[in-house]
Image (cartoon, rainbow, N blue to C red; front, side, top):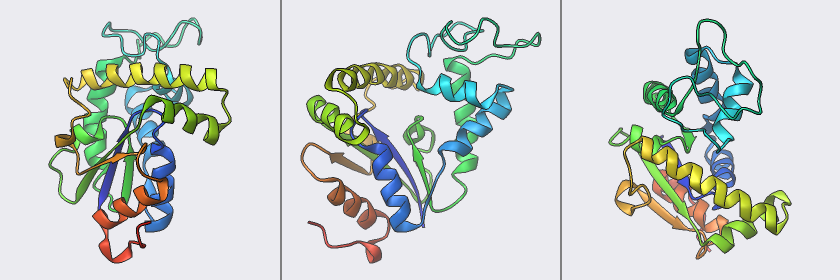
Length: 210
């Protein structure tokens, strides 16, 4: 049917929406496939790249040779100078995502896919936003974090997302014009969000919107 990209302010429920839509429409979520392909092309171990994707400090340094914060291990790269930095990460995503998106019935969560796949046929771009207090509460309710930990995580990951989007030369990454559908999760339920996305992709399968 289609390819969906889901961009979100951290804590707006992007992973939950992706999982629920995948179950309803029998779609695949491309997350692990993307990491595996990135690791293979960069010649970096999978688990190190997965850590690289979620870390904030120094994650998107523009200096060559930077992989991740110093606390991982002293020597990450072999003598051939394998490395990962923000620019290389984005360049690899630009190579990989169009190939992965050739598979139909697919959801890509984050990773700047809304920009890399801009204008691609049968591709819909979803943005999820919410007030910070609601995103913090979502993390508390969904993942069992304390309010303090949830607040810190939401703010840290918000900064991380801004850094990543700047590597796509985008300062206006949350403007509606980039997206097929914008979901304000402070105003609607997750069930309604699912219905709206299903209606966009396949109106024949949508349930009654609450």
